Amino acid sequence: MAKKDAAKEEKMIPPGAARFDSVSAALQLMHDAVAAEVVPDEFLRILDEIDAKIASSKRIQ
Amino acid sequence: MANATAPRQVINLEDTEFRDLLVKTIPALRAFARGLCGNRDMADDLAQEAMTRAWAARTSFAAGTNFRAWLFVILRNQFYSTLRKDSRMTSWNPEAAERLLVQLPSQQDAIHVNDVAAALQKLPPVQREVLLLIGASGASYEEAAEIIGCAIGTVKSRLARGRRALSELINGPDDDALPETAEHDLTETQPVRL
Image 1 (cartoon, rainbow over the protein chains, first blue to last red):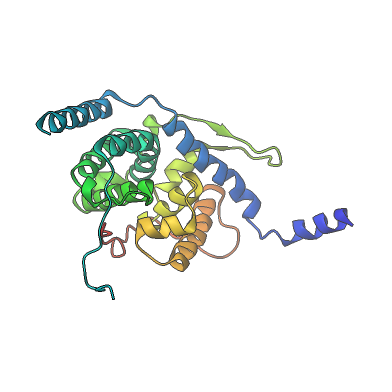
Image 2 (cartoon, rainbow over the protein chains, first blue to last red):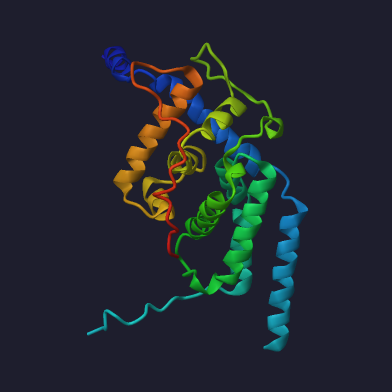
């Protein structure tokens, strides 16, 4: 029964859908590869500036 | 009875909490920017600008709401603003891409990530952003609609068209239908109000 259902399901996959699976995987890989990169120093400089502003506003308070 | 026209009270985060959220979202922000621009340096410039703008606008962020969506709106608005002024944003730089092989066990033909990335840059930006948000960043239809500032139905139809066009650009057309080409229609990219 399960085999029959699986065969039926496979037939229902529209043309191109299986091909898109690898494209979808590539999109995720693109995202994950960038997200896993070391954050460049320029971003850390912005955070340092934010930290300085937070410290400065605390001093004023 | 409450006055419906009274301004909504926004509960803000402490600056340090806001800063922590910003730090956590940097990887996703950079990835979204990279996908939109197709160029590492431009994408990082865009992400840094978005961070700076987000910090300046931090009092408009309501605590408990979706920070990633809020930050992505800022980046997206900045992207379309820059795109209108600088057409280089749409060009893909293959030298900047790492050639990563993706092969699913069930598939005979492997595809390369930079082939997908290059094809992505040929799509209209409105389709590209939906593919990036849902296909790459894992956003829900609702979150994507919030970021783009459109209806969920519009997100779904753009996603379907974008998927079909991307697949056809990489693998060739499935049937007689022509892929949607590299038309950069910016008429539907008005800034989303925060």
